[in-house]
Each structure stands twice: as C-alpha cells, then as structure tokens.
Image (cartoon, rainbow, N blue to C red; front, side, top):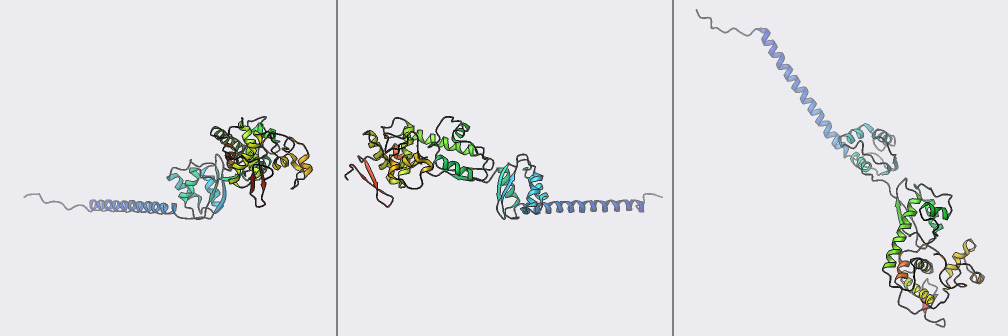
Amino acid sequence: MSENTQQDPSPENSSRRSVKRKLLWLTFNLLLAVVLLVGGFGWWLSDYADRPLGKALDSFVVQQGDSLSSVSRALEDKNVIPDHRLIMLIARLNHQETSLKAGEYRFDAGLSPNQLLDKMTHGDVVRRAVRFIDGHTFSQFRDSLARAQGLRHVLDGLDDAQVMQKIGHEGVPPEGRFFPATYDYQLGDSDKDILSRAYDKMQSALAQGWEGRTESFLKKPYDALILASIVEKETAKPEERPLIAAVFLNRLRKGMKLQTDPTVIYGMGAAYQGNIRKKDLLRDTPYNTYTRTGLPPTPIANPGQEALDAVFHPASSKALYFVAKGDGSHYFSDTLAE
C-alpha cells in the first residue's frame, strides 16, 4: 500500500509562522508610524521655520565668538523666540550653526525663525549714521561725533593736533579738511574711523575738482579749499555761490582785500557773541580780511560740494561787490557806487 499521503503541518510550525507574520506586521506598522511621525514633524518644523513669531527688539548684540546656543537662549530670554531648542535645530538643518556674524541687530515684530537666522548669518547689522553739515567747523564736527551713539570714542580728550596725528596727518591744520556728508557706521566703529573717511573724501573731492577746474588764478588746491570755505559761509543760496566766488576771485586778481565778515568772525573765536561791531572789523587777526590782503591762513569751515564747485567753476562776471538784500539773497555790482 502506498504511503504518499502528506502529513498535516504540526501545530508548532503553524504557531511559528503566525508569530513571524505578526512580528512583520508589527515592524511594518512601527516603521510606518516612525516615518509618519518624522515626516509630520519635518512638515511642522518647516512650517514653523517660516511662521511669524516673537516681539520686536531694537538692539541685540552678537559678540565675536558667541555660540548659537548662547545667542538662541538670549533671544528666548528676551521673548523674541519661544523656544531656543527649535531655533538651534533649524540652524543645524540649514547648516547655519557656525555662521553667526558679530554685530548689533534689530529684529522687527513678526520675523520668522528663518528670517531671524538669515539676518545673523548674513551680517545684516544695524547701520547708524552721523551727519557732518556743510559749513560746520571742525569743532562742530567733533561735537557731532561725541553725540553719536554706538561709536567707540577713542579721540576723547585729545586736542585737534593730537587728533590729526591719530588719523595719520600730523601737522595738518584740521579746519576744512573733512567733507560734510552723512557717514554710516555700525556698533564697534570708532570716531577715528569716521574722521578718516571724511578726510579721504575731502581729499578726493578736492583733487577731482582741481583737475577739472575752469578757474586758473588760484595756484594751489589748498587755496581753493580756503576760498570755498568762505563762499560756503557767505550764502545759503546755492545759485549765488558761483557769483560770490567770482567776486572774491576778481578782488584777489586786483589785489583788493576780500573784506568778508565770516573770516573776521572765525578769527574772533569765542569772543564772537552773535553780532559783529566796527571795532571787530578794525581789530587785526590773521583771519581779518578787512585788515589783511589775500586769503586767510586756513579754511574757516568745512565746505560742501556746491561751494567747492563754485570756486572751481565760478560765474563769468566782473562784479567786485555784493551786498545783502535782506531776504537772504545778494545784489552784485561792478562798482561800489552801484
């Protein structure tokens, strides 16, 4: 009799196969849960990274060498971000954890974590500004620097000669040497940095103007700078400056005294109290152009670009005199009788 009849699987084998199927199913479900959890968290984190959060902060300083951990904790303490750990995670995923730039930052309300990190990794620091006004003296420029917040004041306590030495121009009279403009800076820059930039800018403006001048009487760029400072102080009307420059140049050609009040006032120094008297015009100083012929020894202010241009390109005029009309403008004439 044949014995080909198959034997039924043993209960033990069936049990093993059942356990394996359950383990595989459990493993699959666990992996699926992990994938869904990770994917869900990744989606949430991506959404969070672009979500507006936190409050505004006018000034936040990242020092050289500050870590991402210390910076993010400080931002959390100031309520700019709700959780420093999430910012650290986003920075690491973006490979930004070692890219923070030192400086002062301003954070507007509603910045997202990505925007906040981009600011600090691109060095989008706060830019401050100090303005040097056309016609102001060197002393007034120094006062402006002293009031500028966020600057390192390395020139405090130095006299003018020491300041010029500090910026690398020892022995150069400071008046007129600094270009009036608005100079921006960031936290950590110094007053010396600003003055050096203003000095270089004036040197450049003077050199360019001298190279392209149409006026030929003055023999040195410094003489043009002196005359431009006088033109600057004589009128606030830009359209009159080329005419005023022409008057002074005509008088210099004829050997006439300039007879201009602003030079007298500058020579009086602290003695000037807001008005000029006849005795002041008669009191001789190196800057009194009523008692002395020619230009004063130095500029009397820091002239702006328009005053420089007026001297380099004066009006075509034979006028030798001008007198104030009372409305801020002047009447120009060829003779005193006019």
